[in-house]
Image 1: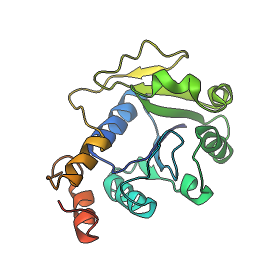
Image 2: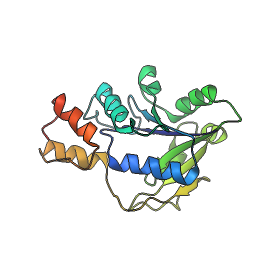
Image 3: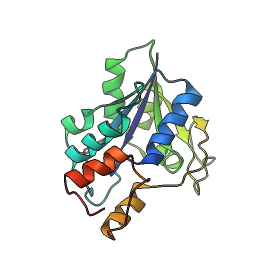
Length: 190
């Protein structure tokens, strides 16, 4: 069994995340792809735009129609800073060998993995998969990984949050179910 872990802040989850996950799933042949929203990401200096409960709810809505996609609240239940090594350990216990674990990162993150906490331990438990992101060259990474190429979309949660702060529409940037959730719970003017 091939299981992919896809961690992130997902603040909010958007079409780019879903396309990235679907592209990786198709190219790598993952049996299951697990979205893992972080509680407090170690790389973020500011708080999240959406609270953690809303971020998890939106990810669940976004992936509901793909039976190979799942959502884990492990990092949220754990609380505090979310370190990938702890998450990978948890899933390695849940899915012992011979299951194969993969860790999906964007092309912007692959070049920074050498700075992650206990990265050598992570490399022993799983294989990294990097999905390209326009403007971020992948060749600088200091480790082995599988490269997956995604076509046609350059989007970030940062840009979506800016649009929300400016009271601009995010329609077509996030799944309709996520947009509906934001509107229904009055989390931002859309």
